[in-house]
Image (cartoon, rainbow, N blue to C red; front, side, top):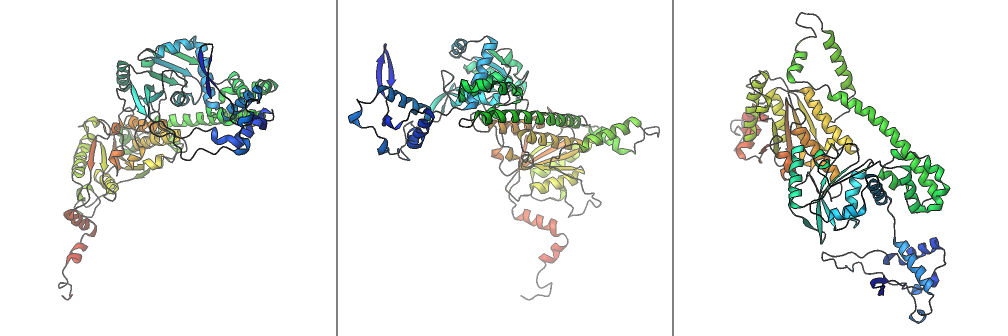
Length: 589
């Protein structure tokens, strides 16, 4: 490239460094020739931490047979050189359908909302601009922030998103990947990862006070939180994916003539059933347009079927959530044989019980195990697995014995559940007996133990399956209340991550769902929650805050007295034989 001045503007003037005579004039064939011979020159070299090119691996050698000779440079046809530059540019350009579709959706929403590009640019120059964007296209919530972070499409950047449910800081700019990036606050719109109203309000106040841009993106109706929607500077709304959008994408890939030849096929596509990911899967450069059209039609039909099946599943899930009962209601139903106070069978109770049984039979498996307490006839038995007989548990044992007293008062109606300490985080090295403690607590309190683990939850195929397993596990615990919910490997849920990290929306949704289940937004009266972990530092701080697993007790490795107590517990009366001297057993010194 050489610089040239045209009408007072400094521009770049490109010319080929290879012999244009190798090109045939067939654009498709010439693009492929460029990729075959010069692909190494179409890829940007890696950079170090200071933005300088790293010449490892080395820059590819220039092919000798394609080199342009200096002697014939002046004699080369300018038209041929211009054509060669065009071929190189097109050979190195790989259109990505998903960002293109995202931009087209955004442009359509701007036109529909009467907002010009000049309005957006002017607002971005101001401190603390607030944008509310609602476009009904599946996948748009994630696609737009990624487009903002990964490209320079938005002026006054580059940008780095900070999730509103993440540990937000007061920095207007952040040093990321060897460059400064302007921070924007990304407000989640989905119900699974939306913070509470109070938490959202606090983060918005901090962001706006510091001049940070705020972006709320929703792909559903009424998805943008009210605090953002009522205070936004620009509100964009769009209908989502339609046939016009698909035609525009196909035109960008295949040209206008191909789209006109197949306009009738495009008109028959069920565009509203497609997602942004579907567009990227079906429309790929290099494949025939008919293949893309067939794929779009098939994916739309498949999504309609999946949505129908999902609605049926949602109805079953709603039914499961309706069967939540208080402990007193459960004890009242289980204490008798189905008769009322006058000795007659209660028809309504029997009908309700049958309905509950039917709904329970439709519940999806959660992978949890319900363990009933072992009846303890002889409370003085040393070997009975109870908290009272455990050795080396220290503060955990004290907590359990206090809970036993409080539970008795709660069942007697003398103590409210909210006044009890019912949530515990138990940590310690592997093999220190965290699972044993849960089994012993089950026997001491004489309540069922619902045992599960984060790895069991993560066996769900999709995110909604994982979140459903989490919710259904708590629902199972509520059905057993009063009971103990034991969550092993709770550190596997991880920490909430910045929006710029890969798969952050997946892990943030999991953490937020656990917070929702623990903090009382879902009623947990009668459910004692015990989480176990080998790595407490890997747990999100919000999980350990007040109202959640706020009581943290560490179980250390056993010392000598503790080991003696453990042996005494397991050996029982055989301990005297083991510790007896050889003389007493007839041995020899």
